[in-house]
Length: 136
Ligand code: FES
Image (cartoon, rainbow, N blue to C red; front, side, top):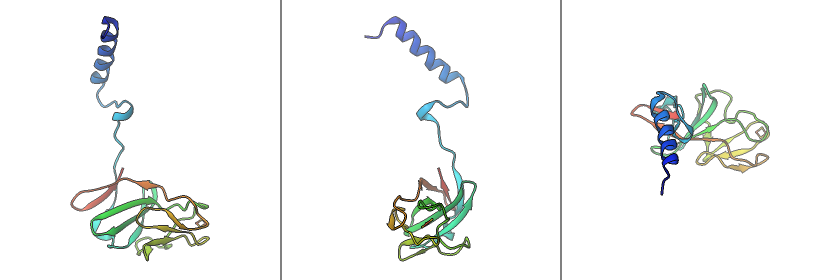
């Protein structure tokens, strides 16, 4: 049973949340989306290094209409994985290479498949509209 005091207290907090427009509280806050590239620029079975406001990203399409996004920062010592030039296909044989010390990462899930890196690439949630891919 809810006491009168706790009912009034929870109602007051609920009213505060309702009355402060644009303010988000805890779990209800939304992550900001970042547009990263055109869908058509990512080859099926491949991926590209994209320079974004969140740093270099590895965007892959392991199979048609399945997209993945990772930080392109190698988890060994921080080099950028993939080819030095952005825009070229960074994935070969389902993996992306780090040219600094030879680590390889899965283009599907970002896991380290060859050392010296042991940890996976940082993952981002990917969303899309008709034309563009976004990360959250
Ligand atoms: S920094 Fe990537 S393998 Fe060492």
